[in-house]
Image (cartoon, rainbow, N blue to C red; front, top):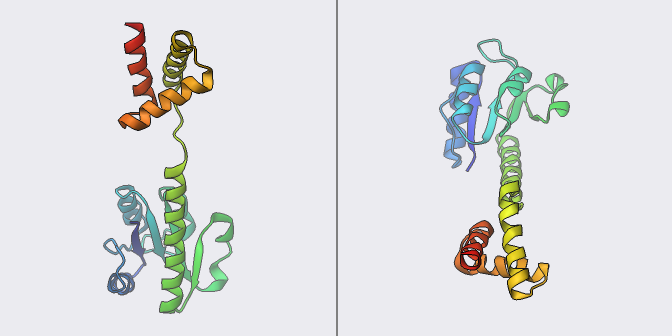
Length: 183
């Protein structure tokens, strides 16, 4: 699950929002008051959402924080709407001040759902094989084509089926085929 980092220039504001989110069941990191704290904390986490004010106590503005944060983190700016000028160009989501709890929670839910969808999409994308791995699979296909009079699609399907049946990768199955037929 994504971690939420709350950062505001006053520690009391950051703690209040953090406590609200914790009560709602979210995984929230310790509150931050400086941009450096946020960046250091985000670097130790895999992904998440940074909820922050316009300017933090070290004078770091949200646009700078957005530039330095890890790419796996999204930003939710809590500020008055007249300060939202750079948000759309930088993919920063905004919530108006004064904060309405329902607006904050629904916006946060929307962002978390989008992150989950992106993670699923990345996981379902086929992994790219290296040139060496492709070469091993090709060699095994050629051996099967020569020795068993298979077509290329049949040889590929055979390696693929062996891979699925044994729980090995295609490369491991191709190496097994090479080990059986070449040795």
